[in-house]
Amino acid sequence: MLFSNQHRNTDRAIAEFWRWWSGARHRVEVAIADSAWSDDLVTEVSRRVKAIDKELEWEFAQGSRAGYSLVVSAAGTPRLRAVAERWCRAAPASDGTWEYHSTRQPDPSSLSAALTVAGHEIKLPELRFACRIDADRYEVDVVVHHPDFVQLGEPDRLRVAFLALDWLLGEVAVELWVGVVETSATLPPRAEPGETLVAVVAQLARRLRDTNWLSLERAPVGGQPQLAAIRQPLKPVRWPQLDTHLAVVVPYRAEPGTGLPTGAAGLALDRLEERITAAAGEATLVAHETSAGRRTFHLYAEAGASVVEPVRDAVRGWDQGRVRVGSRYDPAWRAVRDLRP
Image 1: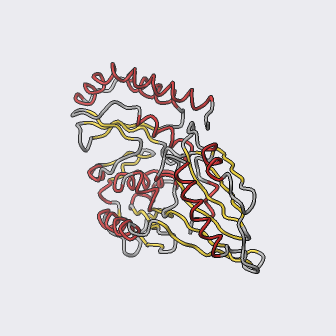
Image 2: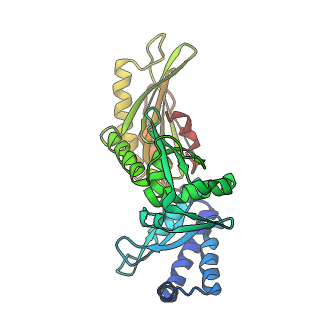
């Protein structure tokens, strides 16, 4: 079982948060309705969230299906995605008053207001976005412009930029589809209001809808080809609860000179993949690499899941060499980062 004391401690803090929330939500509703937040209430909400993890961020927002939304977010920190997801899955059912999210939801109406940053008022309707699709990476690079960025340092500019992107697209879409983010106080060429960026990202997402798996041929090593297949986009935000990497390294009979599987070995590998994925349960196969007589299957599982032994059972009896199965905690998906285009 992939488990740890830290996991148990976090789950206890999550359970305690929701016990507290059942009695505190009415106080929060009154504070929102009256626009009258007491320091004690803000401090208490923060303390309860920070007890789960001190780096989590939280906010109250307008709901899309309910009156209000409570968001507890990893804010881009990879190791916290699974924590925020577990917090959200433990939430009570949404009702007419509250809904709950582990990521910031799109809220373009927020861009009609102003932010005070480092003592300067930034009128968000003046933001403009210049974007460029990188077809190889399946990402959109963005330059965020505001004339008053001239008054801000780069950390504050980026804070405004990422808040604006989260409000336009939602936190998940930003992590999935947005690549390089830059800021500019000078209006860049082809800068447009946010609606244009939303349309560009939607276009990119549609392009990949029917091509979930992407085949890659990487630079040869030792004169032998390296092949890979990945789920695209290969980013952990798609499966935020999966924070533990499993590598299944399978030797096979190779063609002389290329190191690639013989025809019979290739068919056997396909059948083995079916057995591995069936045994892995809710773990997800996200990529595999083939080179020099070995295929490595990369799967991700949730901490606490019983996965390793069922996978070992599934590969038992493979007759083309000794199969190795290993696992390690990897919330940032570093094990497959080099496979991304």
